[in-house]
Image (cartoon, rainbow, N blue to C red; front, side, top):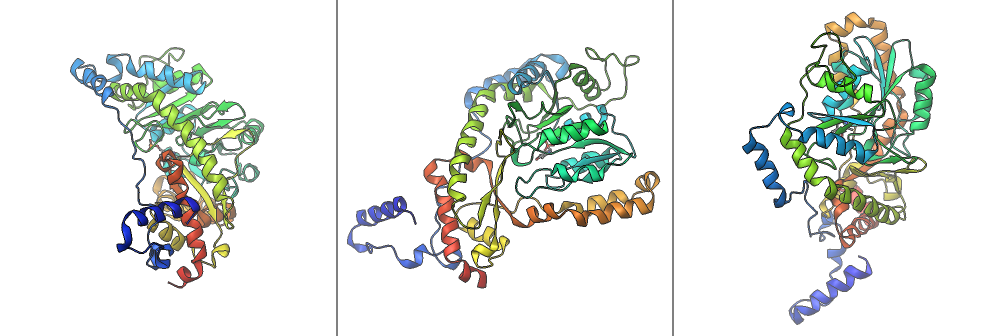
Length: 440
Ligand SMILES: Cc1ncc(COP(=O)(O)O)c(C=O)c1O
């Protein structure tokens, strides 16, 4: 208990008169899992955020009967606004972050039998999109200090089939893009940024989504700029974005991309007008939220780093992370061997919802399903697929990240600082009682 909460508790107790003791019972100061009271009871900000003033805009779209991309201009207006927001040359929207990456992989010519080097420590979408392109996701290792792709591990994984690198700015923290781009240039590989968690993240004065050949964003409900679902591909080449636009719109000719005939190969991955209207209306408010999150993360991180056994993620030089989840590394040794999962349970019980974030997903069904499929067996020899599968054991940095990270959700970073103070306070309480908790 810090001085502020102590004084608050004493004042509240005094206000109730002599019927209750004027000192806080020692048991209350214990962790909830040992019978004490939670540090935080006030709840946390909710997400997504709605404003009633935006409802007319949504109704107008439905009443106009102009619902699809081709019927009105809202989607194009948002694309221009989003490109301006991140300093990209151009943007095309899609139905999701997943489909944004599908478009980007196609346009960067990732084909059946190719290999794409990506981050294993991520939400599952990059695995899926690469596999769905009948290509193999080859995993670079994770730097456990930054939790992003470790560039040192990339070159040894390049083969004559490697076509692209797909780094994930996980948690909204930019990867080491100078190093990644240098390797890509040397080996003539495309770079596709997964910036789905990284809206307005910065690296060396530039925003995520402008750092590689193409950048991919998600506007899914939990993201920093949500529309329920939705996505975007961004980049610094109008020609590439026009190609993306064509592919997402059934292969129609667009701008500089005239294709061959009325249609070239394509998909239907178009955003709806109503999604664009929501995104346009909330853009300024969500931008402010991102800035608040960044400031609050700095405030929280400073307090967390003072706790022995807790270390926040290191950022790349001159970069700004925007924190889709806010992660920190947990060292059980400093908590009397209390296992990470028990720590997560104990902290959650204190009113601080948290999780272990990402796990070793490459050991799960989707990779085995793909490499045992008829198609993959045609594209790679069984010896190649065995070597590939065995190589996952080398991902030592990723294993470390998966075993030690604890993360809180982005909406918690929008809370008052008095609520944020409860997070280090609850961790210190758990640390104090960690030996007892470890026995339970
Ligand atoms: C890192 C990352 N990449 C890709 C995606 C996919 O985005 P969507 O859910 O819009 O398809 C997500 C979504 O959570 C994500 O976190």
